[in-house]
Length: 276
Image (cartoon, rainbow, N blue to C red; front, side, top):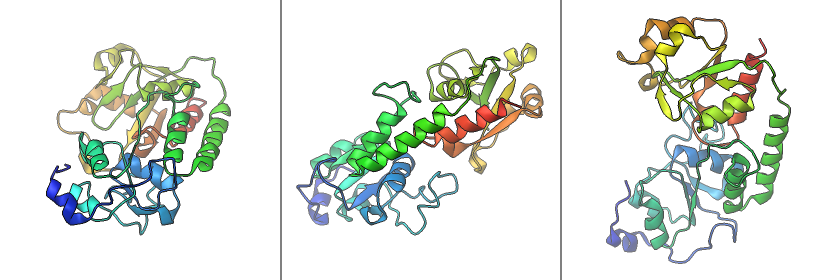
């Protein structure tokens, strides 16, 4: 949590004036959380990166290979300020007051936005988010290249006409309906969401008793604390029966954990799984 301690600012010698994101290429970037790490590691040059969050090099991080040997820092005010960054990048790291705090300290903040829009040409889509982050990191052309690759892969997915349904499930027995990135991901893969209610909720056990999705899209997070607990809906015999079916598409948790270009890995896996 960011501690708003004014005396800490003076003690750490924080720069009081820096360039705003997009006006010059930052060369002392600090990333505060897992989602911010992905964009920094993908778009920034190594010499631009001062430190990333402690989760950036974990196995569940999409960009964990690029994070090798990159220093890490806890999202705590004193730890960040002593590094004298010229840009802080965050999605949620440091808590809700972090952006205002660092900006008062004279450090620009580049915020990773959230979207539930894969790409329909609107401002709030993944390509728009990619370009926003690339511009802020001083790597606009790299952002345009990533967007072009993203859209090429998206366009290559065959349009389906068989109306197959898919149920997204997490190890904790949660799914997601219309209005979420998961729903948009399924539609981009040419599938219909088996969950019809909006928002995040427990998997629909009653519906599964008399209806079956054509595909189970199973998120795999590879961490003990994300495995089913004793009371998880995933331990219900109906859920177990569904997961034992042959048409289960396994999705790495990192593909859908944050709004980013890497969701294309999940979309392609689902599109391919739906062809079987």
